[in-house]
Length: 422
Image: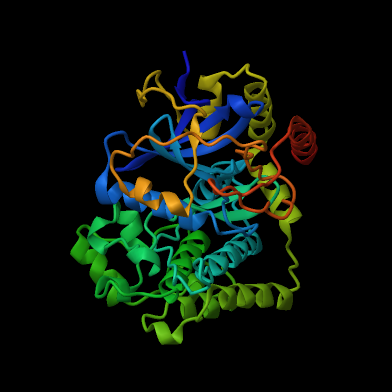
């Protein structure tokens, strides 16, 4: 028996966080479309629940091909959830490790292209404005290779704004609440001494990520947090070309500038860093686009790509093999009744508008009449192909309308992947 949340069949648990889990799910109300759902743990309320809701509401306004699209948010069967597009691929951390394991390490120009694209999405997030057109001063605060997804079509997308800060409704996560040493290693020096940071802290984090992707090991490390603090703020930083002989010296300048401890000396925006990367690729006559990245991924992942596409096609048709899908996705099978949700609302998905803000803020929302839509929102965004312009927002729900991953898309991926791995 498959665990369910309203119309969603929870198939694979991808990650577990202190406040939420992330699942691959099948939406039975939308033709079996595959979605990714971030679910707040049952029983979480108060400021944590409020933060989760405000995170989703803010991110629903982000629209960029290099950002994972949040396609909906609200409550499903009484449980707070955030729905995101399913990106057919893996994060950069897994991609690098897989390439090394098959002795096909990612070329420097491929790494630079992936990071440049992620910077474009990051700049879009930094430029986000609130409903009144005021800058939100959004800062991601956790830009790592684990949070950059690389789709098999060669596109890269930044995800997971769970640790982000913004002046919109005072949304902020303090340093002491960061969940892992990996997140701590992505902090800029100014983040360790002040809770007031700007987008340049994310530029530093991109520099750390780029250094580690090029060199192949962590930049800042230590036995204790005090050691890590000293490594981030004081210890000398070795140039990438000296730490890894295969890294061209021309890469050093842009990486070391991003790693400047004085924020005023870094690239001032993520777009500026992306421009420097693109200029370096042009000057080195190494023109790289998404198709080049896709070929490299096909060589690294091999038959895993068509196997995953076939498993997804079967899942969309209601013939899923959860164990196989979990293995291919790098997650775990969801046990039945994991969420044990309360009685299902009708309709099962509740989206809140601005007038319902008090409902979101309440740990126990009062009963309200379910909304009925003549044109229900699309619940899934595929990673394959361009998305049409977003539909106009309807009162009562926040939803980005983008194309779904179809069986034809999966057939194309299967054929293309097999051709590239021959």
